Length: 390
Ligand code: HEM
Image 1: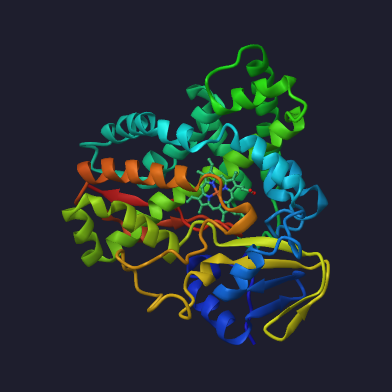
Image 2: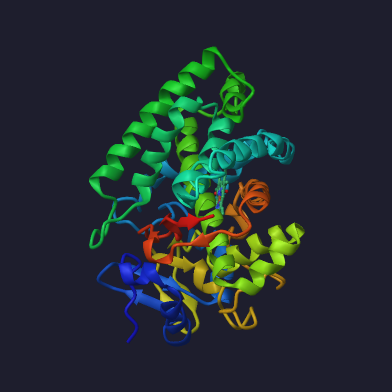
């Protein structure tokens, strides 16, 4: 019998053998004690993503017992809504979160990257996460939300506390709640400031839609800020760390990138497929659903195991091999359908620019494998600490 707990440290170390067992032996897995189901085959995960009428986001996307439930949207904003409410909210945000606004960020992203990396030239040993990958995504989100530079480290520390889980803790820990409260208070004050003194940033343009009938309320704006920090920060930090790690572990693939920087985006895409920073999203069944001969009743929490779908041999040949020139279009790393990641092009832009500047400076980096530390989280996968020698 397959045993699967998304809280187990052993699972965080290497989830892929467990995913394989689930796909082969328990594609519709039920954990009665922890009260959740999990689907692991690509076809089933894809079908659930495309079926918001039966697989609802209204209880949030995390299985943490206190985070899931009808109150989830305070922290998840429109990610925790279903159509038509979701459609309305997302389209208001989409008016300002435009491809043009994202593309226009490139020079600033490069400037932030260069500033961060130049400080590390000549240092010799440093931590990819603490000194580089953990800084850039929060800096970019902060630019979008109009957060001053002086406040960014604190914001990042709160965001980290939200996702971290000590071994054996099967829920949001008290420090996570405290951090959540502090973040809401911080953004409440920021929104009030932007109302009287708006800037050029995305949050300001949402705040000044005020006069419109379909504008967002203060509560809406607060939970949107929270969503941006949680969705856009950890995920992109982990993507940068994971890409550098897997290239280092695969010297043949690394040599390809070293010789031709135009392959950087391909190395990012394969990392998204091979070891995505978002491993699982939860749904609530709104009616009875049958999958592969098993019936999941109405009102159940189901984990969509994206990390497993991306390694399904039915879709990807030799899925356990890291190959940057493979076709990754079927990967589910940014979700599909209604809730498809709103920041996907931003994440790709950040990763390309950050890694272009990285490779120019540190083509010969070596990872100190024995000192690596993983984050322990129910749905985010990547490193808390990734020490390198350059
Ligand atoms: C490697 C980086 C990233 C990954 C792997 C990722 C992954 C995802 C996934 C899988 C979803 C769908 C959730 C669901 O179906 O329940 C999602 C939604 C979302 N993401 Fe991302 N994301 C990344 C970066 C970003 C960034 C940089 C931002 C913004 C700055 C962002 C903003 C959002 C938002 C707003 C949603 C909610 C969309 C909706 O509910 O309609 N993400 N992301």
